[in-house]
Length: 257
Image (cartoon, rainbow, N blue to C red):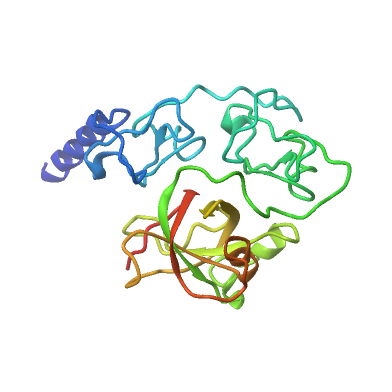
């Protein structure tokens, strides 16, 4: 009886919090029941709250129904995305059939919903075409609003340590990075193959999470370690230490034990 009552109580709690976050959006992009029932900004690029308490869009955000909503994505149109390109580089049926910018360095949409070029992008038939294969994701979309993040230089040999085979899954030229594990008491691996865009002093770079970088003791906020090539996009140098003043969009995990 006690176990049944507890389960019923937890179910009621879930129903009470699902789909409704009545309080104002926070400046750090956190949301949901664990953050004072803060909502996300309707009509923005990040209108929905994930089960991990971050505002975002598309799969993992608007399909969890924690709070916020977005228009239902249009069905895939077999190589055509008729809607305007987004400023965050997301695309395809999970992002309102947003297109990529034809003739740019990132004209094609991958099956993961990111604009890019070459293998994994222009051969996926999501949307967009390119006459010549090009490098993987490099400098990201134009800098925009995001959560503050502490940036550090990664050790290149760490790439793939916690995400086996990741380098074979992404095209040559892909920038990799390390991130703390996502929230959750039973989560033991980083957000492998997920992306973040880091912006700093008017420059930005998009990287693929490929290993765990805890950041414990350095910061209580979002944290990333960039491979030297990605670090150089922001700083002009492949060598240096940690720095503040950057912002992150996408999967921006918080340092934790």
